[in-house]
Image 1 (cartoon, rainbow, N blue to C red):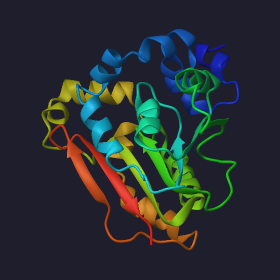
Image 2 (cartoon, rainbow, N blue to C red):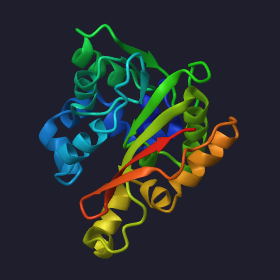
Image 3 (cartoon, helix red, strand yellow):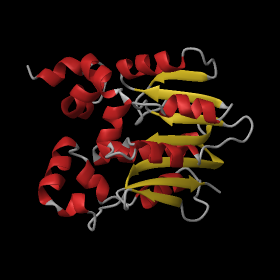
Image 4 (cartoon, rainbow, N blue to C red):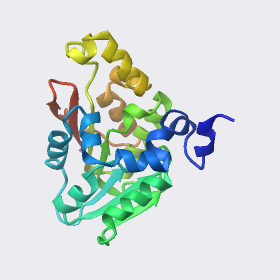
Length: 237
């Protein structure tokens, strides 16, 4: 039996197959949740990306916020420090939720639940803001489409979607132009080449339209690391 099948406990097959070592294996969870490691993976840009993300957090009173999947590092504690609002956090991996609970155990307004981003258990229009931090590039195309659909369903009209991710195909960036580094990144992140080609605005807009919702103009976009990463805020009508 292939090793990844030992990690299939209720998680998507692609997650176990390609990322068991990073998100499901207990030693991997321990290793990657160190700030120097995370910062190195993001090529020294973690703090800049975190700052740009937190600057777009919805802080209006009584706003309900969904962080779609746990992430390594200090995003969740920083999010809780940036707003007094209710935070919901879901992930399909129990190990990730256990890690998040250890970081938030003293905060009663942070609610954790085990859910697949492709099939959320929340009601329609449940949240004022949905935050997605480096998730889409780790999903195959069909899983991304399902996740766009779920985001569009649970975000309220007048709310917002905040996506921090790789930018579109960085053809002028040296990491992309240098073939060995491009191949290495593609090896570690097998779904990133497909995501590079994806029009995030069009995908999210289409999903919203199918839920009788619409974007309020173009997204607010901030770039980082010479256009290699981006923070996108999509406001809804």
